[in-house]
Image (cartoon, rainbow, N blue to C red; front, top):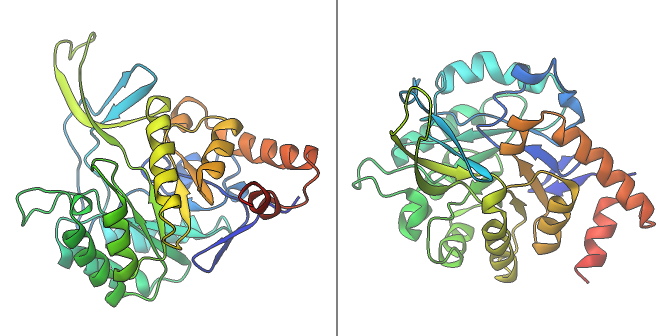
Amino acid sequence: MDLSITIAGIKFPNPIMPASGTFGFGDEVSDIIDVSKLGAVVTKGTTLYPKSGNDLPRILEVRAGIINFIGLQNPGAAAVIEKKIPIARSFGIPVIANISGGSVDEYAAMAKMFNEVVGVSALEVNISCPNVKSGGVAFGQDPDLASEVVSAVRAATLLPLIVKLTPNVTNLTPIATALVKAGANAFSLVNTFKARARIRGGPHKGQWIEGGLSGPCIMPQALRLVSDLYKAKLGLPIIGMGGISCLDDVLDFIESGADAVQIGTANFADWATMPRIIDELAAFLQSQGFVAFEEWKKKIRA
């Protein structure tokens, strides 16, 4: 069964990959699953300078999901390039480096750094980060700010740009349209939803946590946003995510307009989720009489 797909000129062995921030850099789970079986390694969010992350508690389980408040803990771009990318590259599948910044200059600086790195196939540009120079408004919530980031990154690198969109807006289409003009090559969506909940037990009982909501509870909203973007006919491929935990979820995203998917929260419950879904996808396509994933995708969109 040929599960391969091509997005932004990159050939992926299959359409199943981890969501940034839920998979480290691949080495952390390589003794649990066969990472080389996945469609790609998508790195943990990387910032220009090292970040220690937020104080505990950082994760709270809620009904059908989790709220995370990690704070982009990472060793910084230079250390990631020197120590982590070679490991990610060793799995023999495409490596997508996720970058996050607090200013346009930071995004551009990282794009330039990664442009020189052997083995990085694409950048995933997380524009859900707050712009520290504009009162904390997320870059992805404003078409002009988002365009400024992507234009600067585009000027600094030859790598394909997958722009990760925030769902915390009224309408994604104007933002995505502006990003096409700015030089995006693909979109990934959705990032987490803003959320708040009280901790009910344990040492932090009674404390509130505010952060990003992910997991099965957000999937219906994520499907709608992917569908809306697909129907906008902007001409760029879409990598969908948000609450995926089984093959049926993957099929729903593909039928809604996604070309591939990323899986995040489900990994925390069962690291075998991604390899299992890859096997189930191949079996499903075979049962339907197809020899290739792209053949099935083309038929359901005819």
